Image (cartoon, rainbow, N blue to C red; front, side):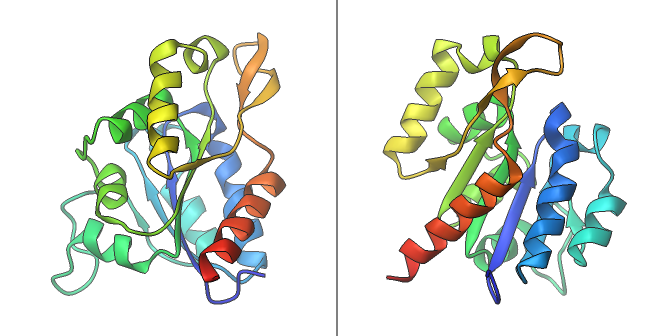
Length: 184
């Protein structure tokens, strides 16, 4: 159970974004408090209303919108999370974080946070296997970021290869594992 734990869930702009609704729903079933941050591109794949309804919390997109009375969004959200999970994570977001770029609410929240971070990549196999993406993942792992997946299977393009988002149950189990380690 994740009773009393706060998950900050970053959702980026890939076709696997629709699976984030199931992730939010399952996390709520485990009694987690969930705050969703969507990139602008994510809003092309799933709606803010869907995620707000499932999480029972506001969903954040705009970096410059105040969260509550005079709170700065990325600072407030970075302090709330027991863990930050990015699922799905595109090559773009992985590259931005690995390069220290904080130009939207999600990347700024990640940079401002001291809690554990779990990244679940999802992209076409050609992108995932690109040496630049692989180096970015290695650099983030060296800094303590955790990764889960991707899996091999049929991709949105119809191709077969590595790049599918890890199974929702596996992501949840990894969240629980990371939070148990953090307690000790």
